[in-house]
Image (cartoon, rainbow, N blue to C red; front, top):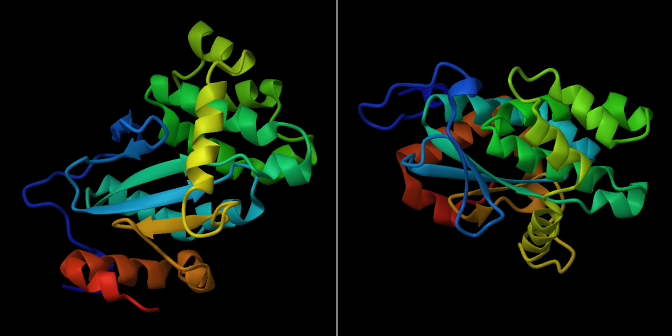
Length: 224
């Protein structure tokens, strides 16, 4: 099988689009799970919505992950950080993470996440992820805006989730301040920071995921 094809679960039917992807909050209270829960390969993403390198990743390697999630070849998990507020000022990361958690309630996390990542540069130039901007961007996701969603965004309803998610991020890896974003773990194994270049090369990431799907055990000794 060519590496570009990957391996889907036996007898599975791909989702038609990201709008069909199931979304759920893990029992740990901070991990957002997207895609087929029975997929044999798990890709865990650590992202801060205000990190420009995350935006670069979302425009490159993350497209491979989205495609394979739709095809049920993998499931995607997210841990959302908000440490960039400390270096950029303001509370835009926290507000964006809170809004993404609110979108999960409406089963619109994946769609809204794509909108936020695609708007990051424009948003940062205009003052960051403010409440008003987050609600305006939500208009691009059909069915997301509601009294419940708008109130959750405006009142920072999920502030405790934001704090807990950042704590989980900081407990990941060996660095006490966190592994940096984007960081990717495949089947619970972090790709080392010095090898993060593979995340931005669609062909390399496709080949890596296909190899893991063919031989999951080999991944434990993977050295890029």
